[in-house]
Image (cartoon, rainbow, N blue to C red; front, side, top):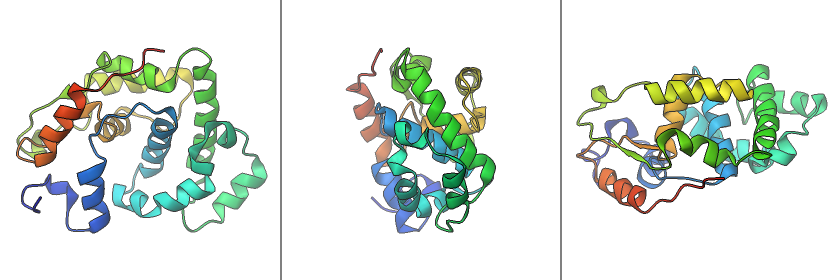
Length: 199
């Protein structure tokens, strides 16, 4: 795949190209990965995604690979430790939100999986958009607004409708690769064989 074929946001940096070519838009149903994405999208607020990508390995290391059971038990000492770690985004509000989001995730899982909860907003099927240019792609949609409202009602933080739509794009709930990008059809095929959990 050449640079002029990819979605233009992928840019020239190898880490961003790999993310575009291998991850973005691929349907995901694993609760741990979905929680990680939600948390990292929250950390991204006000920053560029490539900043998060460059720090993702360290985030995974210090956040116990975003294991909800472990993150939910973080105490004040752990928060202070994280605030001293230059390898992540040292923002107290976002760190505290990550911990509370893990706690809320566990509470939600008493009723249904995080995956089933989220995928229900698109009826368990990836939405196949056919945008031709980046300017055609919305920053948020009525569905992302509904999802953000529902997440907030459950107690999740740093999950506004724009953040949630970026999340939906990244985990393949919507296929927003432009139609000229080779990954559009790849992700469409993956979406066609995807089965979202119902519980």
